[in-house]
Length: 408
Ligand code: ADP
Image 1 (cartoon, rainbow, N blue to C red):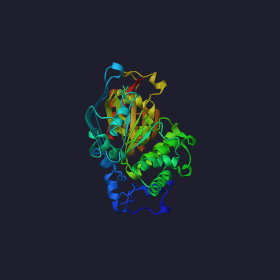
Image 2: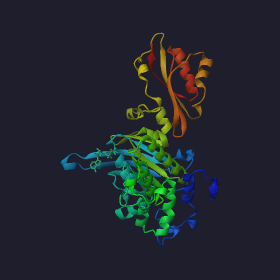
Image 3: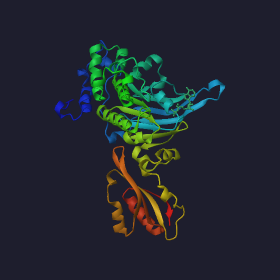
Image 4: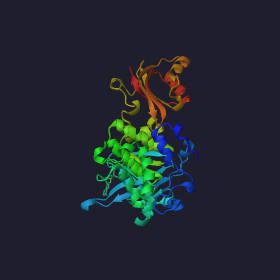
């Protein structure tokens, strides 16, 4: 593969990633002592293939696949058994970022522990890169786990080891020699922006820096899959954003497949391609992030969306809203603008072409899953005929609309 010349690379992240990108197998530097490239391959420690385009993601072949998975824990202290997961189907395509969102106790940790083989399903199958993880015994799980990196809410760094030695640890366990470890760890530290902190100890780092070490360590064995267990929940919003942007950049460049669990919609919105909402051990809704944000079908999803993306109705409107049409009043519509339509002058066209007055009540435009996404609340004449013409006009332009009530 032709790599760009160093001067053409725009950022430290891109420079570091260029060192970490996969090279043809014959050129790869073995990591484990005495291992040749093909045995490294066999041990599942090569870098992932590059990310697929959107088209490929829409036809997922299921790089991570949960098929009718249930997990029942025996009751504690003689109590009843707990069904933590109940008939879960979830498929994550190669190179995709999927977020699983749910409240505490919904079954998120159980789901992620099944994917990395820490738990076995009570029924159903958990398949990662063609391997039935749930059917592996402890010895066979070792190599499978090396192709799965994991990052945690509380970072799980060893306080007695420096930044460099924390990242090196998984390679030491694999038996890599010092030179091989240096060749791998140094570009990883560059990539996460911590080259100057290599000899510091975790206690000397901020939360965001600790998570950067966690990310570098998770990538040390060149995994194909990265699992994120509430990785930004202990961080402030600004640090969360920078960590998520780092993960998104790494995912794009290395083509990693990322499965993340979280209880924050803001995390999903910033980097996930698809989202699955879990409640009481069941997936109650899943889809492309922008689709779910545009038209959440399940009450749990709507409660997670809450004030995200201008969905909440401002109090001054909510107080006046009535369910039934009001004689001589107006209908209040929520209109979702997405992707290429987000910046179209649709409302002025509607006004001009249909002769209908539109009052804008509230609105916002932001980015979701990398696409412009806007929600407007507008008031239109509430008569049935005018309303039908207006909603038909908007539907023709593939805008999602919903009459949320009527006002005087
Ligand atoms: P979440 O990560 O969404 O908070 P968990 O997967 O941790 O949810 O838990 C789901 C349910 O399973 C909860 O009711 C929890 O109490 C129960 N549970 C989790 N782990 C165990 C376990 N090892 N033994 C018994 N019950 C468990």
